[in-house]
Structures are given as structure tokens and as C-alpha cells.
Image (cartoon, rainbow, N blue to C red):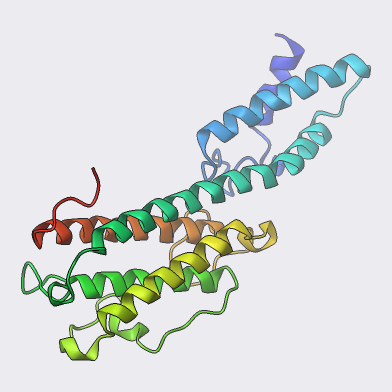
Length: 233
């Protein structure tokens, strides 16, 4: 067997390398493409190193490469999450642009949420994302839009104009925070409460992007049900 192939076969049998999870399974918290790219990068670096030196400590070489590339992968992943939030911001902006205030409280069914509640729910959870990233965000009406909150009289909710402004403000602040999110914050252990895809703050932010997208679909549906046509296309 080729020594290079043999050595790299052992790469995936060492949990200490940080590529396996605590149960010795291949860590899929990063994308598969990232793992494949990293594997071939290691192979290339190892090949070059063996040309320069008679012997190479494979484990030291691998740890060095992982350390150098880990932050780059984090930047790519958070950029994708920021892109999801940005796409959702654009869709919601188009979806609510021409919906008259009197339509914001109409519901397709007794157990359904109206547009005001869904937008408010998104604003609050974008604010929670800001909090997780270390920003200071709060609003006095957050409890009205909590998961499972009972519907109240329409007059108890913020005005449509206030909600529009809150949506724009929190979306702008979130976009800025994601662009500036430092790796030492994203790699912290996730707080108890909201789910995390990887047990880190980065995974919680990614979960909130998924949550955001779920409700953007509801907003698009409500727009069409209200008779204002498609939000996309």
C-alpha cells in the first residue's frame, strides 16, 4: 500500500485529531464539501512536506492545517447563514410592501396566525439572534410573539407602521452583526434553550436562520391568501 494512502487512512481513526465526534463518528457538523476539501489539502501538504524532509510527523502536520483552515471554514459557514437571512429579508420586504394595514390581522382560520403575529415573531427571534451574538436588543412587546402565545385583541399589538420599522431595524442590525461576528463568539458553547446544529453559538445562529425561513414561507402564503399575489417570482 502506498505510504501516503496508508497514513491518510489512519487520519479518520484518531479522535484526537478533532475530526471525529465524542462517539468516534465522523463529524458532520461541517459540510461534507469542507471535509473533502480539507482531506485533499492535507494530502497535498503531506506530499510537499515529504519532499522537503526525510520524515514527517503526520499528526503535527494535520493539526497545523486544521488550525489554519478552521477559521476560514467558519467564515464561509457564517457567510452562508448571513446570505439566508438576507434572502429572507428581501422576500419579506416584498411580501409586506403593499399589504394594507387592515389586512394585517386577517387569518385564514381560527387557529391560524395573522400577518402581524408572524412578522412580530420573526422580529423577536432576529432580536434573540442578535442577543446570542452579543448585541443589546429588546422590545416591550416580545411576549406577545412568543411561541405558543395566545392571540390578544388587535389593539394590543404594535401598529403596522411600528412593526414595519421594527422589522427594518432588526434586519439591518442583524446583517451588520453577522458581518462582524468574531470566531471566538461563534465557537463558544451554545446557551441552554434554543437548539444548536453543532452545540456551538454558530449552530444556534444557523438554527435561527432555518426558523426564519420556515416563517417566511408562512408570510408568503398569507400574502397570496390575502389576494396580493406571489412574493417571489
